[in-house]
Image (cartoon, rainbow, N blue to C red; front, side, top):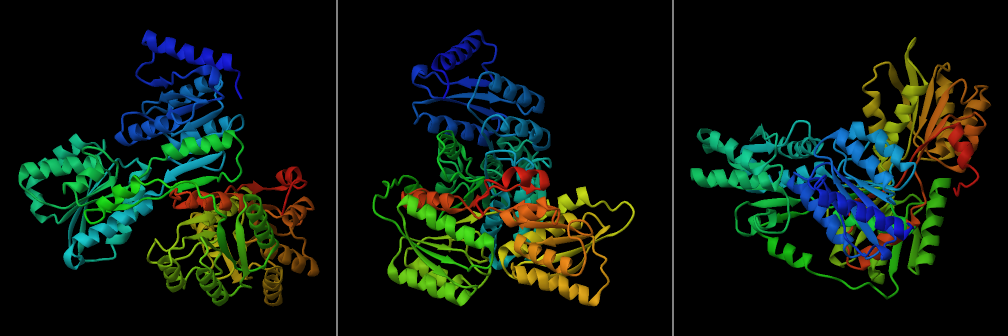
Length: 621
């Protein structure tokens, strides 16, 4: 908590600056009764020129106005990395308690944000920096947004055939690249669709209007337009109106207000818009939780987007106006855990049970013993019991459509915990809470690149896979191979599933040794239990684990730390099982009427011997 006189001096200083006209174009400070202020939050915006960022800034201000005990200091980097660095340094000098930052250049700003994170909490918005040196990331999934736009374009094209004009933003915009990737991934599945891409570097209404006017002779061949934001969509619509063309347009942003996306759908100016939430409201809400040390704040919040079409626009607007009072009744939660295959899973179950008790939630627990059939039975049991929420940790990714449709028809929301599922209809579950599995695989391969050089020889790797068809196994393998593919001197020479168990890892190594001379440089295990099994098999054969062969695994359990400290393993990538507090927070938010984000991602880091020594004593799993 800040000294109130100091805070008052800071605010008065900014008022003085503003009055002098020295920074009126790029800095904002709230004028609150500073004797009541407990916290000062600094906000570093990449710019305040883009319409989306102006909405983001306004959302931050409006949400902050609901709290009398905080004050904001907002800076505008004017699309300059150097200015943003100086802005953040000034904010630190003014004694802010927490920084909210939307980085202009991710690569350049990553070390700056990492440095600030060592001093105060940091919330990163919109553009994710490299690594995990921040308190919380909040942003949209632009690839998913692009896919949703592609799905809507298909609805506009009879017979899934025609010519589509894609109006994308700058080639240097990550959000634009992600939207294109998602969009093109959908439409390219239909060979009768011809895709033409034009860039509008400024991504503005006026430049888009001029571009379409210049292309008037080619517009007769266009059947639909996909614009990467609603401002570009409006510019395209204005040009088409002048030229006498009626071509359906899909936009992105979905803001409320005159001439914004939702109103353009209402008056048939465009056919649809895909919402792209800014996260401004969520940034302030989570900032207050962080500053007040509320448990359950995740590492990443990936915001949910919606399709708003002429068919559902009125219902969408009505739902926005609805408010739900906090649920004061006891919440009944049915929880289907996939089994007890590892120390990680046991800690995961214990965390959820303990957090439910602490939150006053009635948890009905069912252990599936690695059987999807038992999980489906459990879900149907929960439906019969008319629980409020179902939590599912699925044993495999596929085969859930029928039973989850039953839950949907019963009006019971489903939250995925720890593992994802693959379904064609994305509204069969409410949110996913857990780790970023591909990033865990990438981190494992990055560690190998740094610690097992290929200067003089090829590097041979054994991969101990998790349960085939389970999202952690699929994600970790995909992320690992993504980095591996960029380095031709590194090869996976043997890969089998050990089903995430100690015995499974042990058996794979024993099987390899029975038919091969030992020639392996690295073992990559999808979890710590399999790595520990591999260590036992190596020792039984006279091979020194951690020395004769490097071992990297995923989870970060206490047993893995002990193996690393003893030199028998070398690295573990954290995947925390302690999801209980975050899960209970999500359940309470859901029951109080809040919309949950698309994904809630937990924290994770890389542990080697030095980090393991520091963290072993306080390890809870």
